Length: 81
Image 1 (cartoon, rainbow, N blue to C red):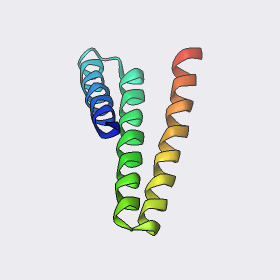
Image 2: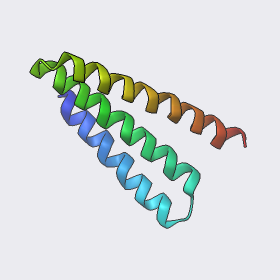
Image 3: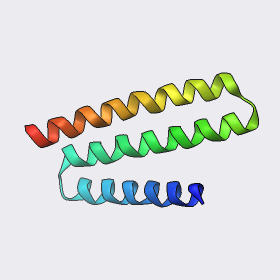
């Protein structure tokens, strides 16, 4: 069930990013792209952990956290500037 929800969230983020790019709203498109990267890396981390690749899973989790922080920073910039 969580894979379905994650998949739907990734599809929504990618479609929104394309729509926002076409509308030349680049700030919010970049926000959607970083959210997409966060979701894909988090899902990849979980999948690697299930397969037993702990070192790679930790790396992917850290990359997902990096993109989550970047997403938060972009959100703050988009809202307050």
